[in-house]
Image (cartoon, rainbow over all chains, first blue to last red; front, side, top):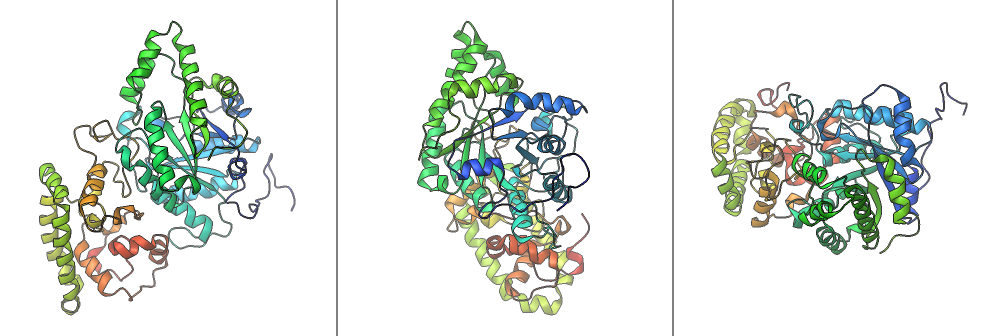
Length: 324
Length: 189
């Protein structure tokens, strides 16, 4: 096949046998390697240079970079735009789709668009409510929820049709991801809901922030009891806290974040809270690494992206096999 | 009414029994409904259904009732209208992310489901809502679907949706309907 016009646009390839998309992340996970992903802080800018600048500190230590989709209902550069830029420059990306802002017509079209631009991982999210964002008057769409979104993309990929039944000539090869939040109610049912997400099509899971290790361990025990760790790759979400004040603010204002008082007290007592926050994050990563059934780490270093590579390298979690 | 809604979840088992009786009666009446014409039945039945279910469940008349799979807690009261909740934003104590004074609709749903005989139905993935069916009678749709399970319509769109959510089609046929819709049961959203 001849080279297509434009920079670095490669002909559309079929995935290797036994793979959903053959992305770098999928290959690493299926090979049993302990994977690392990280969240990119999307720029409030139209300059592609800003995207590459934000990606640089993440790329050397990650198997894939997550481009958030207006997380916290705040406007930023779109996930699909960021993924398109980074993918063409050779980075592994995870295209996040939130159900809050677009209906089923827009989403299915975007999935094809993303696949055409080389995106091979997608993370299906419900999305935070519009009320917490910078434009609370926006109309909440929620035409899909994360599970119907997963099932729809799986149908497009595996059956080669839109949800309307209209055929797709070349299918979108996507490695399908979903989120789970083990540290918010109903704790005892979070693993059961995870099972539902796997049924809907999820192949990998990135969790919300884990600051409460005992709670996460109980979740993982239930996951192993249900045998879910054998059916899905679980990447545990972590991130460095800048200070006790920042932690309190996050706990009060960002939906779905649980930070135990002990963590906040520890930051309060520290003479250098930012360093303590980094140390705490590294300790958590090392302890999470030892939990059977965890397949990787997802680093969300909001406004501290420059630290990601240091955190990952110092923790020593990357590479090597997974436990259990 | 919020209080009655909470009460309905606590009595999910009794309501499940009642719903099964209602469903059986409706299916038995299918030949009669068919003779009168489902189209002519649509408005009066929808009127009665709206009155009863608004009072008990704060029903939003999505037309694709899934109460039997959601512990008698209506998912359309979730501000995100999730059909497969709860989301990751639930607050400490089990309160809603968007409406902090309201108990999470989906925590109530899993609670109610635990009280029901068909407590496994909540584990099935339910399809997205078809917004054309808003305001129409789910009761008639269910009896039509169950009675005429073999009558498949030619609409390719609906066939794919039903195929993508096979188990939901089986347990909650109104969510992935296949039978032809009478004119008054649909409208543009």
